[in-house]
Length: 474
Image 1: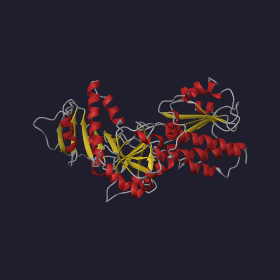
Image 2: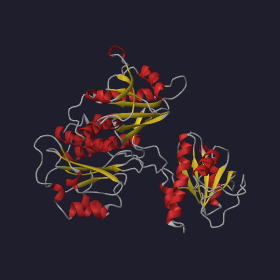
Image 3: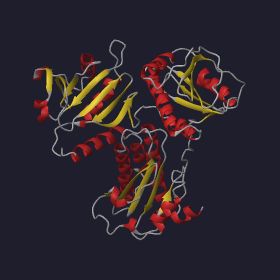
Image 4: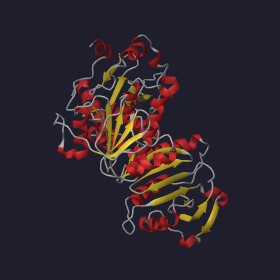
């Protein structure tokens, strides 16, 4: 096999495995890489799904008009990650990681930075795995392990989360630690997937360094020979009921549960907050990731209303009113999602409020008043839509939407979604936010779903990655 053919296969398997794995952790995700095999080689680029489109000017300045990226010398043994400040390549909306090794003189990996990410750390660890595997692949020259390398990159979520936790705690000064992170992460997934008397878990488990357990304010402690082990998922799940809806937490050393405590926790502690069907993992006050359906995810599970915010910016409302209206809609959407019921919000941008069929008020409630906003959240449970005006008032609830059939209707999406398509197709100044009971959000205007996911083409096979200079000319 020629060197270029092997290079093609190596890049293909690793890039595809990385993209597939990240798409489960942060859906949807693309990946790209710029690399040079030898210190004097021209840079090549592999970007099969157009991730780097729009960044051409910066890439041109960085790679073609400068040689800073080549560095001064290669590591003599193993791979070295290029620090972010040394790399000096900051592309908006992208997460990057660069590395050097004897087998691959330079590589820079890219993936999307989603707006709802809890932390970029686990994703950067994932990119580091890809860089390591590319270096190993070029060093070995054997095609037999490449398929396995791609498969491994598809299933790195727990490893990326664990490595980021270890790195972050080391940065905070905890180099000598006795906390075993993997058992704790396994327990999180196990407990989060276990019902007790038909109810999903709620409550908080905190892992504290064993040497600092004396600083914890225990409400009660368990004898050493009776401490529940974290691997005993069912026992821990039952015990979690003792701290539901309270300020109490279960305290563990990463292996067993020592007792129940209250108050602040010492050191760089880890915490898992269970909130029913989902939950969050923290290092002290910093969120690492979320978890649900037996998996870790990068998102913070808050409503992503970027498209709605963009529509507000196109109106003639003042910036203050735009901001207030955005906060009102965000508050209602997040409350509805937490309560696991769907709703529809009709946001009327017109100067004259549209007359909608539904229940109205003698005096429309002012949604800037917190009590009235809570009322609106409760009214969202009723069938029909909430009608919110540009005056920040609730003009109606239980409102009906109708209209003629339009292209893009989807029977799989239900009545809320399709009614919103029809209704907005006939009323230009409306934006409809549809919240499904299973958490997805659709933002619809002019009969078009603005939040429709872009399904990227599958990577079916690649020619040798082109030179970066040629790619920039196309």
